[in-house]
Picture 1 (cartoon, one colour):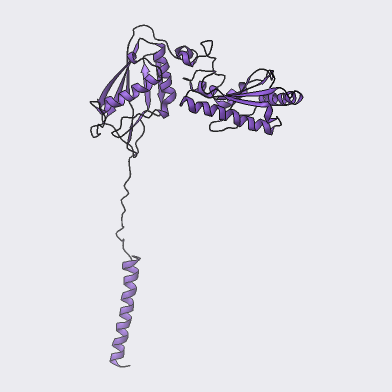
Picture 2: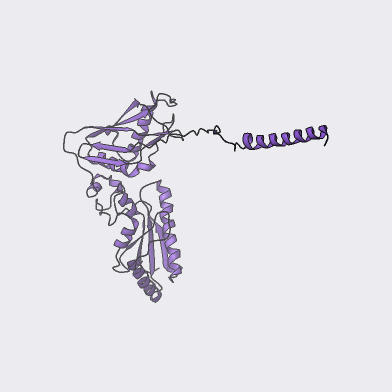
Length: 332
């Protein structure tokens, strides 16, 4: 073999070895030794927890919630959706104690922009809270407002939570609002014809449905619904009512079954009126499938005008979301 060919082979072998080394050791880093790892830094956002609601007036009143009032950054409007039961209980407490005064304190942060006509964004927020209680029937004389700058934490949606409530006024013993006497704190417009409410016969829709007992098809019976459903909760007692009503109406074609829908007091009156009628119509469709003639079923919506229980109580609102059924003895 000539010298030229020998050198050529050495060059070729060296080139191949060098390429293999570069690929294995430099690119894939599979050679001996500890390669320098590539560290990716993950930016973690710190979760912001909602400040819990805690409103207390001595030993007379105390409500809490893991949720709270909410405000968007630099905005006046208050969101009360998450704490409606607590705020309604507070409104009832103030109405039961007309000499009691309450100051609403609106918080605001240094970096927020005041786009309102109030001297401070906190004062504007406090007024939004005051307006809520005025709409709930609390006297304007019982409500004062104040703004307070604080170190507020905003979540990813640019929202913050919380407000202050300070009580003063009467030195008389306050009326403690409970499930038993909350009806006494209600406004006359929310009362029944006797001026008092029955205590709810259950804390949820299932308990309320089980408490509705069959007595006679000529005595009203209440139907209850799971949340966000038009299908009433079936029980042994309402099944008995429907079977007895079906047999009676078949034997007496001039008689009719009356369905009256009801709602709680949340939301606009006209919307509740439509909802109550819709709820009664949904029950009618189900009863027609059970064999009762459509012509013998009449429906009506009463909206929020005929509550069974106090709407200031969570259980009371559930008790008011119902359809009353009864066989009328008059002719069609």
